[in-house]
Image 1 (cartoon, rainbow, N blue to C red):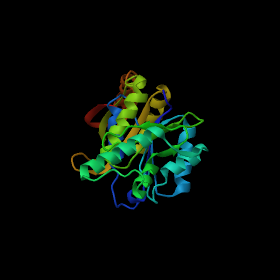
Image 2 (image 1 turned 45 degrees about the vertical axis):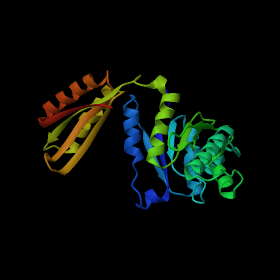
Image 3 (image 1 turned 180 degrees about the vertical axis):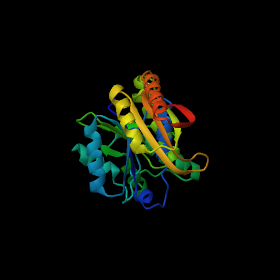
Length: 273
């Protein structure tokens, strides 16, 4: 299995607040439905140096990473060029991408009732959307046929580049998961088990949390405090998460430790990740 799954969101419009990111919750959902989990997400504006540095780390990571946005052919789209720079390779028009883009242009001309003019300047410019780093593999786009692309770095990190538009990006990410990641689906089911704890302070619970993680190395203990919850008021959600087969024993020890502490309990929560 890959070391981790990651997500990169590219675009000044996200960092400025002009548009709200919708990819993060959707990618978490798509991975979770297949027994996988997202380990990290990076947000980067339309700055070529930052995009290149972010992609260089991804290619060196050994992870499966999805990159959303910036693969068009306007002056503010830098992702294709930055991917090539991060890999240390040149850019070239991908023959399959060219065929798909030309097919799309013919479709548009037919819909508009005008002749298809392959050498018209704007049509030639559209082919730039198929200029990918050398060695790239295409990702089919069921919405408008303009493909994304996948590349693998020397560190065995694979980055899968899709548009910023959710209507295109999400089915393309699903295609990548089914095409490249199916052997890992549901191989290591994860779950979490937690409880609402009233009237306790995180500092006093920390020794118990450290002991649980020491006794159960594959388990992570988490603590989510709240000061103004509309139902539970001031409380801590304290729990364990990790491989489904390891969680019950860790939960039993945590629950026992909370009893010994004299904690006041609220509802328990169990969630498959």
